[in-house]
Length: 101
Image 1 (spheres, rainbow, N blue to C red):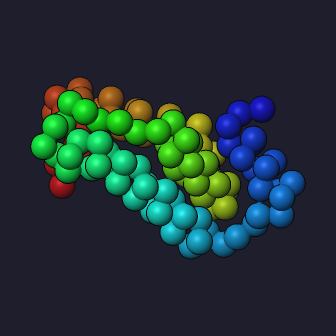
Image 2: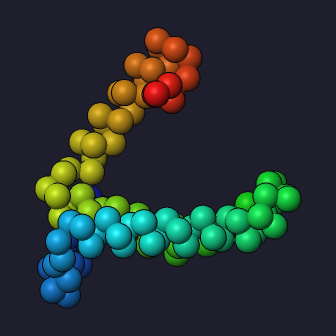
C-alpha cells in the first residue's frame, strides 16, 4: 500500500469525503502553516539559516495533497514521475528546473 492508498483508506474509514475545491482550500491552509513556521523560525527572513519546520506540519501538507490527488482521481506517483521527467528535460535544455515563464 502506498501513501495515497493509505490516505484514501483513512478518508474512507472516517467518512471524510469532500469535493476537490475543499481539498484545495485545505492544502492551501496547510501550506500556509508551513510558511508561517518558516517565517517565524527565520525571524521573517533575518536569519535564513534558522529554518525550522515541524514534521507534523509537513505531514499535514502531504496528507492534504494526497487527499486532493485522491479527490481528482490523479495517481500521485504517476504525477511525480511526470514532474521529475519535466524537470529533467528542463535541466537538459536550459540548465534550470524553472519553466522560465
